[in-house]
Image (cartoon, rainbow, N blue to C red; front, side, top):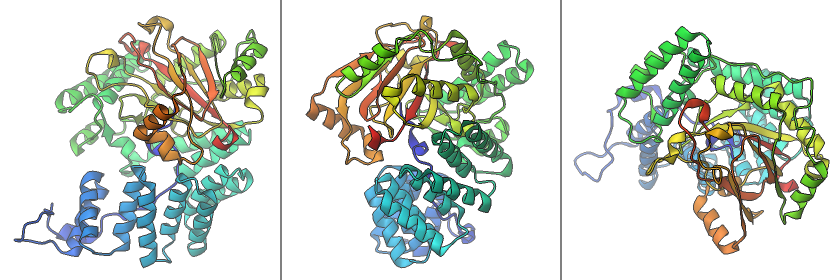
Amino acid sequence: MKERQNNKKRTEVKTFPIPLAVTETKDNIAISSSKSYTPSKEEVINQAFKFHSQGNISEASKYYQYFIKKGFKDHRVFSNYASILKEFGKLKEAKLYTLKAIDISPNFAEYHSNMGSILENLGQLKEAELSHRKAIELKPDLAEAHSNLGNTLRHRGNLQEAELSHRKAIELKPDFASAYEALGLVLLEKNEYDLSLKYFSESANLLNNQKKQGSNNERFTIISKAKIEHDIEQFEYLASKGYEAKKFTNLAILYKKIASEIDWPSDTRLLILNNKYQSLLQDNYNRLIHRLEAPRLKEKVVNNSLNVEKITNDYFNHEFGLTYIDNFLSSKAIESLRDFLLGSTIWFNIKPNGYVGAFLREGFSNPLIIQIADELRKKFPKIFKNYPINHIWAFKYDSRAKNEKSSLKGINVHADFAAINVNFWITPKEANLNPKSGGLIVYDVEAPKDWDFNTFNYNEQKIREELKKSKGNIKVIPYNENRAVIFNSNLFHETDSYEFKEGYENRRINVTILFGRREDS
């Protein structure tokens, strides 16, 4: 399944913070057609920057749009508005406004680096590389540009130079968490697993400590009802297992109090925590306050009794490549991984559909999951060929999705940025109330090769139109504990409807491992 939102390609985009002068301007200037007062150009800019810095993107967008419609020109406005458009997947528009910023200020290195990030998401990797190199030429000490170049080089298959670029970014900016993660991904592709784990760990530590430094990282400020209820259940689970029982019992009580005070518009709507609740949560919310070990096992973790020839033939008998495996992992491996995912406070990514995600850069990386991925590719060489491990993550779902009119659900239809997708499930089968559902829907329709990442990963309307036009077959793989689905990652797929028992240990959990690149499929 896909890694959503800002996790797809971790390119760094520079935006301009609120200027100091904004404190002297009118608060909450109204942008209306009223003739009684027309805000000045600088007042509009300052108000837009203020909303943007506070994370109020919808209001910032209104002011940027008002500014642009008035015919005003300012490179900072064009660049900041482009960054918002990029996050919403409007890449062509983001490119246009970044070009406007560059036209006004051609020697501003950050704009060229931003342009490179946009071009990379558009699939224009050669052009993206040129933009990043231009940024470095203009400002050799811009760490973000070096790391962004490394991301582009990785996606072009130039792992050696990508590694050097990320190492340069870290040299320039030793606390640059994204560069550590990006270097970990490069080393993962180079099969340097122990070293990759080291850099993922460093990324997790740096991200975890940002709150103490007064960071406004959205990881520490964004919440939903579904997310806080997940955390309450996890704290109660940890206390019941004897892990710092007093600490986690008190945290569960605190979170319940906060949850009861917030006026939630729905289970899934994302909200910004106000200063009061941020102060109450202190350094506990979305932090690595408990992490279990998941060490490499001495014995094989992928089930030794699997019929490799049959599974391989089943995969290739499908027109595009698809099969599934039962009893995928050894009992010891799945038990260890399940304990890790239940007990580790690594579920920081909050999804609009109500599920939560855990990623390598924030604490999911461990020797066991790398062992599973590596053994899998070696056990089925005809399927995985020489594809490296591309990425790994896990998602955990809310069992209340079964309730009528619930806004909670699984992942929307999409394709992934890889050659082969492996999706496996670890929640005990007894938790599944409907054995015929709860798994994965895979369509016999590939994402068109000329679609960019944002289109095949986010544009559900366009995807549905493509599915209707293609009239391909649909394969529904029901949920089963320790079942792995292996398929061509370019095929559109989505979470099937699911009905699981309520209770923390009954939450549906899937792990995704991606191999190779999309162009290899």
